[in-house]
Length: 210
Image (cartoon, helix red, strand yellow):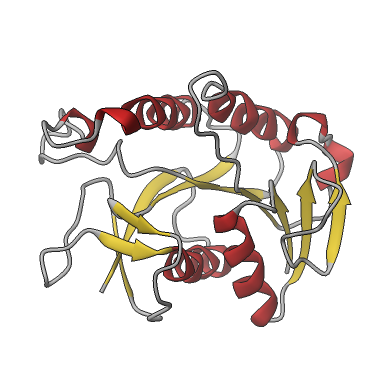
């Protein structure tokens, strides 16, 4: 299987590259930096918005690891993922996106989300809103085989790799300890499992540490 990881120098993307390569997949990293920080055996220096159909032709899966944190660039979440959708439109190439937890529902009616809660930090609300809009735009694309994977609420960059996780759906899910937590490493395991299975095309799923 051939996998392209876009924005591959990001911290989550690096974990995905490592996990996929350790399973024997052929991984190419794409990023705008001169230095290959991703660990991908093949690295192509190219900005995400400059990618073309020809760049991604021949891959089975494209992983979108793009992340923005400051308000001036938060709209890039929608812009970049929609650009990838346009490139992949009408093809069998799957697009798997590193999502956010703020848009997970907290009630069965799916009328309230994590970011609406009184305890949700104000500092993270702009990012949550940006990724919620990204998901909304993806839901309108029936021409692309996309999957949006939300992490648990506590997404730990340096958390341990336990190798165990619970795959859930659209609602915030807690583990047996009442926690919503997952490490980048375990999230990467879940993502590569989805890459292998392809069970959730045009769906948002979520993952939490078991």
